[in-house]
Length: 316
Image (cartoon, rainbow, N blue to C red; front, side, top):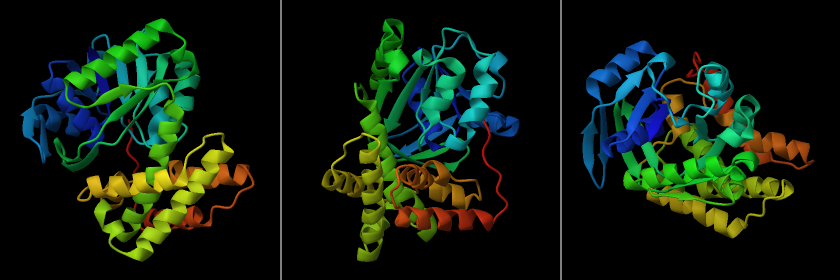
């Protein structure tokens, strides 16, 4: 497949490296010309518990340098989705599709507004990755990728064929991908995991596994997750609290040494995705007439961390 990965963060570099190594035609799109030059010169090095490898990468800052692309995979921050959509809208072929593999809620909707729901896919991953430096990523937790269509793409046979092809391509690359019918529940489960882990690790400045070492942290994590599950129920998504709590703990264990994306942002003094994760729970809870005090506090604390530095959010 011809694939363009947008965003050279941890997950973007991980995907680009695995897919390139598998022989796919991959471009990595980044808005920073200096970083593009470094990626072209260095390639991408993946450090993992199972294997370590290095691969050259085709990186570019210009859409005009990218040949016909079957699918664009968005790995940028959720706060940048609208800007990416505007940038791509009149610049990509009408047959190209888009996959959001981002944190938080609302990404599919923003992309569908610009490209139509029949061209948009949604995905979630449990792979844990930490960006060590430009072009070097630690594959800290081996996981899976789940892919699904929107209401429009699910009923479009051509779109479904592309989605199935993408899953097969990812599997050949060793990324454990699955096409699922109910991507909505998986996206909510991923949100719940992020709600439980990301803000706490960012506030405390610790790797994921540290959250399980003290009862106080576990209690806060459990209460944040419980609020998110309640909001999901109010939105018509039936999640089982015991299962979701176990899922969050399992992710903490399997990615114990991983630095969450939100903590990475705080360490680099970048804008976080707090508004699309815990903040999204707070907004949805308010719209449903529900209380979400733990998520309100976590959101406020991370915003406080952001206020303590000069925020320069990543751009597509």
